[in-house]
Image (cartoon, rainbow, N blue to C red):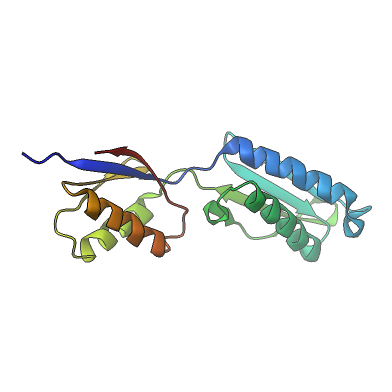
Length: 167
């Protein structure tokens, strides 16, 4: 009887790395000449996985986002898991923007991944949605490696991590 091998697909963001990157971004903003005397701030709520950027105008808000994004990339935080909201006017003639951090794979994207795997014409692959992650199983290890390769080449809008391999 053949043993079934499996692995899990997740999409998680290390909140400690996000916090470290935001602290670096705050230091850079405090030192930059174009932010001198402006009301630029970066707030992070780890419980709700949400960032709030506040700046004087849209131009400074975009510059602030670039600083944050650069620092997140340097700390190996997947920027694909960030969803920018619309810029909104705030108090004292400032502009505010909320950015949501996506933890786990949303159900809609999980269905897209399962559909993609079914359409890939691999016969022995089974994909199951388990909460905010997916489990892919097959009797063939080679097919599982092929699935990982196919998923890395495809863009589903979230950063995918592969783990919990059981062979």
